Each structure stands twice: as structure tokens, then as C-alpha cells.
Length: 420
Image 1 (tube, one colour):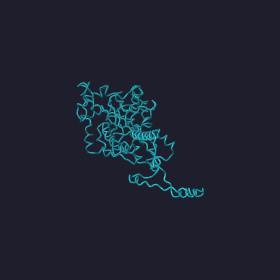
Image 2 (cartoon, one colour):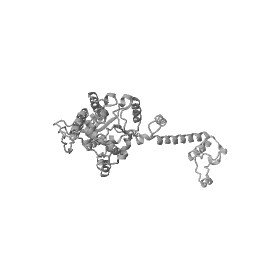
Image 3 (cartoon, helix red, strand yellow):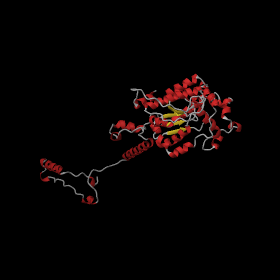
Image 4 (cartoon, one colour):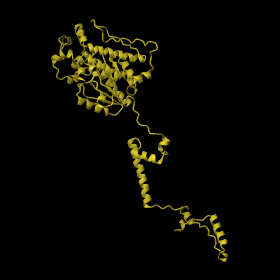
């Protein structure tokens, strides 16, 4: 062994060695006690006395394997947003004195409730205005806005329903899916049923807006909508609205006028037939599957309630809607060249829209009930009444005050809505 690796005996050891030699009767052959060695040369070179460390190739390999395992674990941890399973197994084997004890458990991504919302927007009921808002809100609030480029296919075959539900259900949550499509029952195909929202408007106004929009578009330009109706002939494009209604053109008579109810009734063939069956089923779906169905005539109140019910989607929506720049953009979606039919034509049209109006008034009553729960009132200025003797569909009555003792706590009301 090299001299610099020898153990240096201490003072007590030297004393013990001396006494042992005396007691053994060493006499004249008594050995002198060993003296401590002073390695001045080694000290000068920076060496400090102590035990020597020896590493074998096996020890070196073990250290390198441990370091590699640590690096791989750190890499997986960063890529996956949390520890991989084999590190969790190691934690369990080693006990509880790990990183988590000092820093707490890792927080998973908490999804808002509901995290799946469908806006199966009814045509010509303010949907373009709402979609513009949703595009801004999705960037601001960080939810996934899933849209569709299909605008003219609301009725789907069974295979088309399955494909659409599959695509929507696998979207990153929280998502809001929007498309012109009749109500889809997700649970029928084994998927989780999302929360539905929608907006409707007075049926006569919706029909007139659609009639003239298909012909002349809006303030964004006629060319945009000439593309949507390329097969429309000139005589059809400039067909007088009164002639269309009174002469029973297909566009102005049933079943074409039975338009709003199928959006809530669903994909069943009977949902497209004007009658009690579709009407009752639409009301049932509103009660069971729709969080909110508002009316366009009170759009600001609709936005307020959406912000209250779904803040993770619609927070600050009203301030965005009232922004002057956004209002200018929204005004471009107003249909142009729209005229009011004659009183006789309106009377006929109103009778053909009987079920649509029953459903509209049902939705309006439900909407006003929600407003009363939050202490909201209607402040709508009705337009001038036309000179014909039918109920003015644009006029919205102010909801009556709640009876004493019937006010509900807002949070309790929200819980009831989510549970139904």
C-alpha cells in the first residue's frame, strides 16, 4: 500500500501499544512506540489525509444508469405535464418523502361545467351576429370554437348523425360547436349529451328576412349571396312577396314555413311535418336539453343570461357586443331590400305559421321566466304597429313581477338548470 494511504494511529492507540509492550515483559527489547508520520510533501501538493475511494466499472455503470433514468424521467415529466407511471411506482416503493410532499399534488386540467356546448343555430335568427362574438370570445376566453362550413344541410341520415357526433365528441374540451342543424341526440349513439343553446325570433320576421336575404343578401354585398343561390332565375329573384304568399308558391307555403320547430324537435321524419307531434317534442327537448333558448328581439338580455350561465364562454360578451367597432361590423349583416307584405298576405302567412307562433310564445314565456329569476325586465321599444288586425309578433310584453316569496336564489336556480 502506498505510504500516503496508510492509516495514522491516534494518541490513544499509541498509549495502548506502549502499555501492552511493558506488560508483556519486553525488558531490554522494549519496542519504541510508533511515531505519527507527517506527510509534509503531500500537504504541500494539496492532498488531505483521509480514506481512499475505489470505483469499479460496475459502480461506474450503476451511477451512469441512475443518471440516465433521472434524465428520462424528467423528459417524460415535461412532455406529459406530469410524472409517468413508472416514476409514480418508484415513489410508492420509496415511500412518501418525495417532491410531491414538499410541493403538493400536481393539479390536473380542470374543465368548466358544462365543457361541451352546442349552438345549433336557427337560420336568420341573429346567428351571424352571435358567431362573430364567439370568434372573439374563443380567443379571449380560451375555449375551442368548432364551426362547420355546411350551411344548407340540417337533416342528416343516421350514418351522417353518427359521423358528426363522433367528430364533435372527440373535440378538445371545453368546446362550443355551432352549425345550422336540427337537434341531435348524442346519447342515442352512446356519446355524452352536451348542453344546447339557441336563439329564435318572431316567425314572420324570420321568414321575411330569409326571403329577401336569399335574393339580395345584406350590406356586405349582393355577390356573396348570389353565390349561395346560383340557380335562382331572375323572375324568381324579383318575385313579389305578396304574389308568393297569395298564389301559394312553394317557398311561401307549408311545409317550407315549418322551419323553427324542427331545429328543436330533432332528426325524426315527423319533425318536419307541421303538427302537434313535432310541436310537443320540440317543447320537451327545450325543457330537457337546452340550457337557454332566447329571443332575438331581446338579444342584449340573451347575452346577459349567457354570460351568467356560461361565464367561461361568454364573459364580457355584452361589452364586446356594444363596442362601436363591433356594432359597425354587425350592422353589415342586416338584410337589404326587405319590405312588409300587404295586410291580406300577412293574415294568410300568420295562419300558416300557427304552430311556429305557438312555439315562439312558449319559448318567450320560458325566457321571461328565466329573466324574472335574475330580476331582469324587458325594455323593448315595440315598432309601430302595422295596419292589419293580427297580433303584432314583434311586440314583447314586459314580464310581470314575481309574487312575494317566490324569488329563488340565483345559485340554486343554476343548479336546478344544470341538473334537469
